[in-house]
Image (cartoon, rainbow, N blue to C red):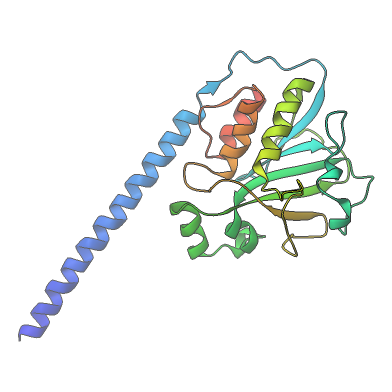
Length: 236
């Protein structure tokens, strides 16, 4: 007679604990989203005015993740000296642009498509500071403006600041070479490299792009965990 009562009390206590946990998780999620919406709408460098001429870059958005897209070669830097074309089987010297993204290393490696996302990978990347990687993709020709690809004209000085921001995001060997993670690209035109920094809820792939905008003095969000927060600032 005592066993069923003990089991009932155990499961009631367990259920209450689980309910409290889920309630706390829901509250944290709501607060996080609200903070992202509010702080993502607050601009920094709000007096910024786009240059009439200079270097054209793009900010791209796949609906969740943003990237910076830069020319392969300018008077300021030829990226092929750091990102060797021979490491990209599907690219050659005629390719005009490079896409740069920063993010959770495990997420990048194990989630080429959203259908590949596992619960463990998602939880780890969100709730624990994790190692990071730089994702680099060679792009064959200049992008065209649309809702997912926004051009930005910046001065040469601003471009220098952006280039330095990106360079500082890569881990480098003593000789200055980037640390290629071999065999982990999604296709023949992209690669991954070891990166500086930790990925977590408050420093996401989108906040990295937003940080690049801040670094060069462009209008940016105060904090941008979401892709639309970044795109709002470059469209305004």
